Length: 116
Image 1 (cartoon, rainbow, N blue to C red):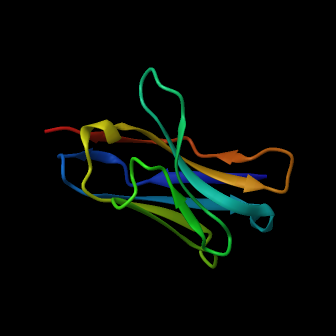
Image 2 (image 1 turned 45 degrees about the vertical axis):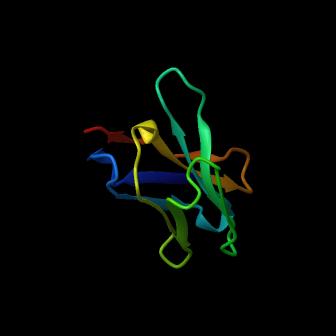
């Protein structure tokens, strides 16, 4: 199995920055792609950013130019640098790992609140 633990969430003012981190443990060799999702109250969980094992990244249009995803395969971590935060970025952010095992892995989530 794979376990994911997020950290770095919190309260930030509009225009501010946060860096989320996700640490993976377990059967690490089974992990291929990783991603950050978010879910706001009353909304579907949405893909924010994804990154392949080789480093290729993709972003939702709403965060392009503001967020950056990165991974360190030697430390088994994936980070999300969030800049120029907006109130609409408020959500619970979840780390995700695609695995060669039967099920993908999800973290428990970390709350990000952007408010003046």
